[in-house]
Image (cartoon, rainbow, N blue to C red; front, side):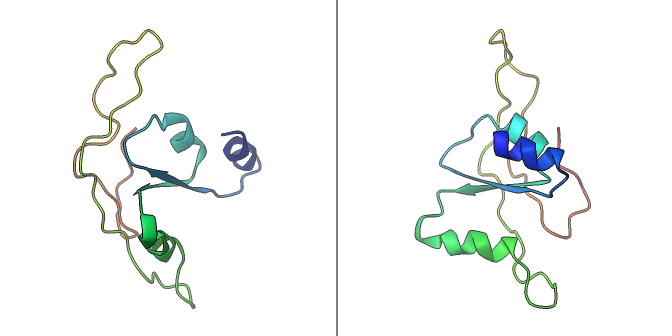
Length: 105
């Protein structure tokens, strides 16, 4: 998180990639990154994550994102343990390079 904050303060664009097998509390990281990718345990297919992050020569999108959330991504509990209002991301959420919409906050 310290590295994300330092790069953000220097106005260096950051793409954060979360490799996990379950939803985690990501609100702080999401706020500190310009783009955020959740990659579900890619294993031997980790190269597929790189494929969607880097463009082809000439700048064209070589491979677009197609994944959608297989579950609702919850918000982190509040400081007092109260249930947060609504999900951070709903079931089926996902963006592509062509998406015009912004992620929910």
